[in-house]
Every structure is written in C-alpha cells, then in structure tokens.
Length: 133
Image (cartoon, rainbow, N blue to C red; front, side, top):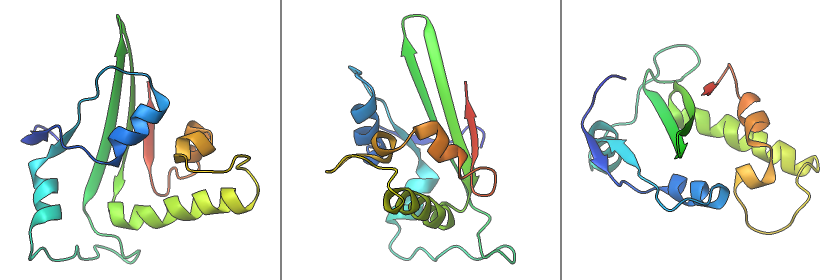
C-alpha cells in the first residue's frame, strides 16, 4: 500500500480484541486517512464490482506488530474488498459454533473461541492472505 497519511490512535474493535489476548501496557492504532474518509463521507458511493465475483478492487491490510524487549512478532492479513470478506468470516465462525467447536458460553472474541491461526488459515487463500513472522 506504500506510504500514506494516517490518523493516529484511530480506535476500533481491534483494540478491544488485542487487549483480550495480550497483556500490554500500550496499544497504538493507525488508520489511513483515505479509509477514514470512506467511512465518514456522507455521500460515499458503494464500491463497484470489478469482476464476475462481485468483489470490488478495493484492498485492505491489517498489520499487527508486537514487541517485548528485543523480540518482535508480526502478523499481516490482507485481501480484496473487506465487505465481501466479512461474509466468509462470519460463516466460518458460525459453522464452528454450530458444529460444537466452541466449548464455552458467554461473550468472547473469535480468537478466544477458536485457534486464531487455524481460523484465519481456513479463510486462505480464497479470501485472505496471511503472513505470520
């Protein structure tokens, strides 16, 4: 995606999800200005389909970097048309719930309900590109 202007500390659900998995004294979040404009512009048109799948050509990228001392871990998830990606994500989660793969009751994140790496890998390569280092 290259260098782009960002809004610093643009907090969304990701911050809550991360804090449920990692004991961290600090979380910094960034969102590109272009993405925020897409979300807040009152006359924003819906993305148009760019091929027979119906997905738009818009791309998304979520990168998480965790540092402790001199150690660093990084996960990058990316794909095309985040709105079209939402449906397979929800369907995969619900299929796991109804098949009994969730053994606990209550409110929790997907990462608490399922093995995160396995869950995300189930969406690859058709809907998501995932890199974990």
